[in-house]
Picture (cartoon, rainbow over the protein chains, first blue to last red):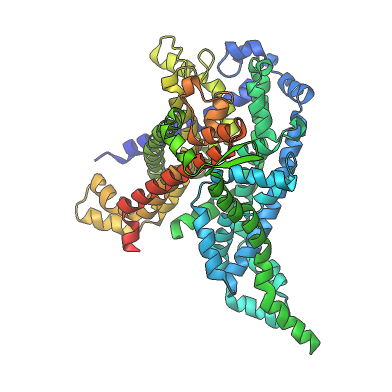
Length: 278
Length: 299
């Protein structure tokens, strides 16, 4: 048996080592985006003996010479639209699945469950056909409209809304609340943590989406950040501009990091409830 | 009276109205494409216009297709490496973090989880630099540790291609898995450990007899979901190898093959067949995993 101080030391050594592996690449990334190309090869992290050489040139070049600013705005637009739509539709649908009896409910839920196990890539070919048929190629419709369906989100909200007390809904009805207002004023506030968690999850998914947008969008000015950055890294003219590439990566990570800080508590709680209880 | 009828009307039809937008989109953008892509897998297509029914032709072709087997092999190797390393590492970290002695638990939890926020494409761009032979951080760290200059060409050597992908994906997902295991560990009844200690069980025996059974549902969930997710590997290798399949196709995955066939060669039929082969593989493996774990038996 190890003594308590020894165990304390071992545990914290292990944890610090792992935390280092997680965090050091972030520090490396920040350093790389602030260094000149010469310093990039000279120093692993920051040039400690010449901190005055640190520069924002990489960021200036990123926004000045590439359509990066446009991609950033496109990404913000696409991810926000996706999040608002999918959270609204899923919470509304999840409310109906949890708190009402209606015809076809069992069949619907069974169908939904079956599709949940399928890898979404199997839909790529036929969805592309459909997008061509609708005339949505190279438009954001092709990304936003199909993206508003989330079977996972429906089940997540159904699970959370089962916990909304029936007496509360009944009291609302007696007071003359319409069903839509019951959803808005009673059900949604009760599942607030789930809204926070799911908002972050959907935003993250849309922010990082690559495969489908890459198929649908051809015009460079319509790209989102992942497509833009993935193309930059494949172009010879940027392959040697390490600082610019790393600055682009850093800026691409920042918005989600901010959102995470805001929603952190809800997120970790919401993330694990389904897995542990279900 | 009229008002009352309107009221009961909105009460009766509210649930239908609430699910209608979902159902319409679900039918048009999920169920229909699902059936359609199954149909497409029996056609030979050139672009979206020209289609010819060829029965099981696409599937026969895949059975003899060297590239498809290469993609399947690469992906399977990756899945084994990923699940085999991610699960123990995430569980180990969660157990360390669950100790009563730990100071700064929320800092560590944040540090481990933070990597999950970085999307696959951004991780790939970052790791393309971290893994570069000369100025990459990994080779620098190895050189420093071993005190000899090391220049491993992580991204240029076919045998190392999937290893490089594994580095990136493990960095991305170990902390995420840890969050689940930590929640599961915290839900295990503390009294059980004390009972085990009274019975004279050592740490190892406590792990086998108390911890593992206690977290089994989450463990099975993580293995099955992790396997399904790993089979869908695409972005990491695709961007890490600059929109290619890596040296000698060593980083070609099933989804990458699907993408290239469908949207670069433009054979949507064959691409659909690749997709449904992936469905079959995932389905069979998940079935075996669930059977072995025996979760269904306890219902």
